[in-house]
Structure formats: C-alpha cells, structure tokens
Image (cartoon, rainbow, N blue to C red; front, top):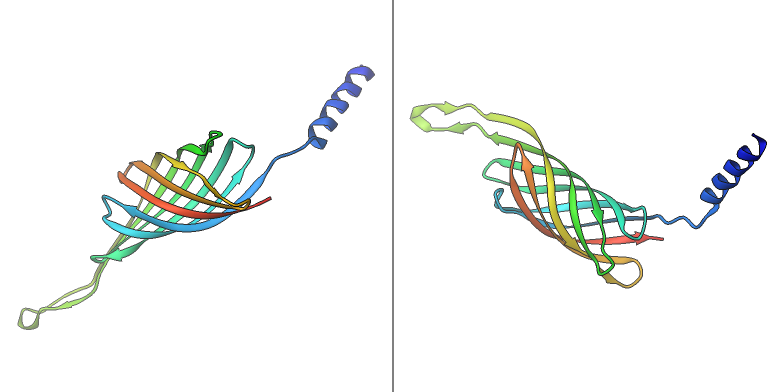
Length: 164
C-alpha cells in the first residue's frame, strides 16, 4: 500500500512540475453582421491551454441603427491546426433592444416613446485563421454563423496581443 501511495505521489508531482503551457490573449476588432446589416466593434479575450486548444470569450457591440441595438456575447472553443486555421464552436447570447423616441405628429397628436428588449441564446459555428505578426501579435479574420433564437452570419477581423 505504501508503494502505491508513493507511485501516485511521484506521478502527481511529475504532472504539476512538468512543462505547462498556457497563454492569455486580449484584443479588439471589427465585425459585420449580415442579417443585422451593421458594423460593430469587438472586445476579445482568450486562453490557449495547449498549442492546439483554446477558449475565447468575445463581446460585440453593433452600432445603433434605425432605433435598434444589437450586442453579442460569445463563449467559444477553438482547435488550432498547425498551419493557423481553426474551427469555432460555442455558445452565444444576443441582446436586442429597440428604443423609439416620442414623436410629435403636429395636429394629429403625439406618439409615446416605445422601448423593448430581448435576450436570445444560440450556438456558434465558424472558422478563423491566425496570422502571426511577430511573437506576440495575432491578426485573425473570422466568420461564424449563430444558430438559435436569432440567426445571423458575422464576419470580422481582430488583433490580439498574446502574453507568454
């Protein structure tokens, strides 16, 4: 029994003292939503667990258009192939808001302001590519389709700084 405990201890110590790999990255970019028909800005963060596996969380704010605002929060997993291409798969939360101000119709009266909002949940599928710009910068064009309560296609580009 002592021998088994000793072997387990040796295995555990070798696991935690081995060469670990982790890289945190942060950045921003631009996106275009086709069904939203508007441009947005993105804030991106990610964590590379290995050379190939990464998790990312992104927030996209689409500029207000025709009294409507859209934003998207994405939680994705990526498998990065050795040549830079990666598929995107994950969860999405889309926030939609409408705010129409009070309108004066002159002799016909006034229409009160109207506002409403909703939150839709969905799934992301897509692909991206990492262009390495030196040791710490990544330029990554991406495209993804969100399937769920609100279906839309997005394409964009982001610039990420990778901490070693």
